[in-house]
Image (cartoon, rainbow, N blue to C red):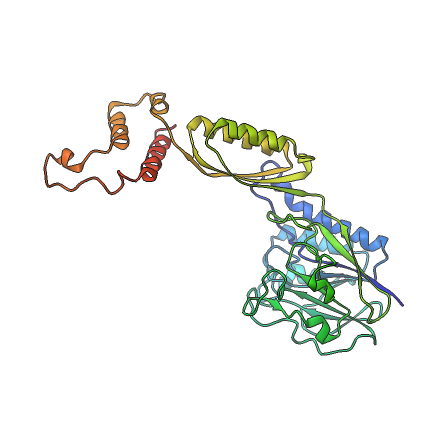
Length: 390
């Protein structure tokens, strides 16, 4: 009898986009909403079960609110759910998996099975499941090594692991949380369900040809832009047959990474603003942008104004202005109406004196440690401008 199930991973419940502006607080809910769309997928496709390949939570010590919401979410699962821990939420002493108000509630959910031990599990559809939970955040051992050798064809055999498939995105010898690239073949698995990488595995990838697939995260985090926001529907006609794997979109949020942009004039800022105005559906998109360069105070204020506008118009805008170095001019200082002593300090910064002149002594040490360093002088001028309230 054919078997179909849903493969998902890297929920990262509790993850929040703190730097995106007005929607930061509500952003934690987006991931719960994405999982509910996975529930709908499983129900629509009449999946025998759902496997979650680690990193259910963003941290091993999520807040009480996140734990409570997770229980409410899991209670609504339309099919049996098998979960393992990942490197973000390892099943170690003191972690969420052993927190009384979470683990006790999990035991009451007959459809939810946290598989926190490396031992075979009898799953629905005559499937033997081999869970490989992460018990340490950083481990050199391959968590799949325990899976006994087997032969395909007798019954469905599915592995469930979290880590770097060797050769996939790093995952080389000596790296942490690595998974052998021959795991599925050695253990006779029909399918190896993986978590850790946040984009699903395309059909033409070497891992897919080895029956090893990442599902990716169901909703993007702050750095995902390639194939994030999916869950995989896996179908096996008979034990031993090659799996049919279809990605289904469950995420709602897009990410536009504009990269780092160097500013030196208002024209460049205007061009950037025009470019971003052409992006489709900003109300469903998170923008990542870094601005850097040496700018005048008016240009800095214009950049701050643009950042504020973007945070209002986009679903979220993570605009990093920390690399903008303000270079005030003499006229900028004049608007501050400096006192005589403050003006004297400014003259010193603009035209550093020799310490010998100050001391009126020919052999006195020279004030030269930074006077010839234009970058240091510019930084000193910028700092002085900020101190004076500019």
